[in-house]
Length: 118
Image (cartoon, rainbow, N blue to C red; front, side):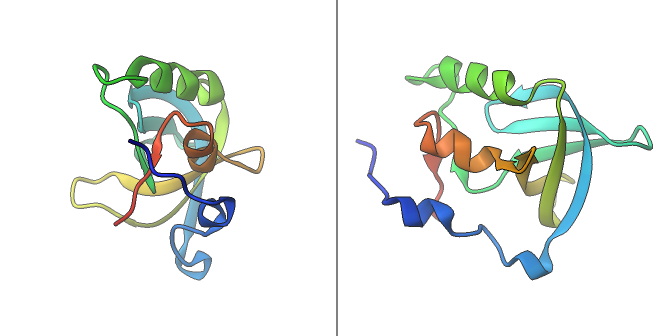
């Protein structure tokens, strides 16, 4: 069963903003329910994993809906990525912003994904 988290829990940043770096680009591909590829101005692709969420697998309840919801939100859009570091497999573990809207928060608060506690 999903655990309810009060709204203030969702408003906490995933990492200190002082340590964050940013990049921006157009979303060109969605790898799965919580991983995207963006293309920056220099035509470099970056693999972005949405930080702080756990998306259901395709065969789980809402797996397909979660995927469709993220696609409808960001496909082809120019986004800002706030990240603290690259992971060991060269992907950005990051917060995704579209016109100032936190997409990670939108996915979790919509009920499409779960808030990931680590």
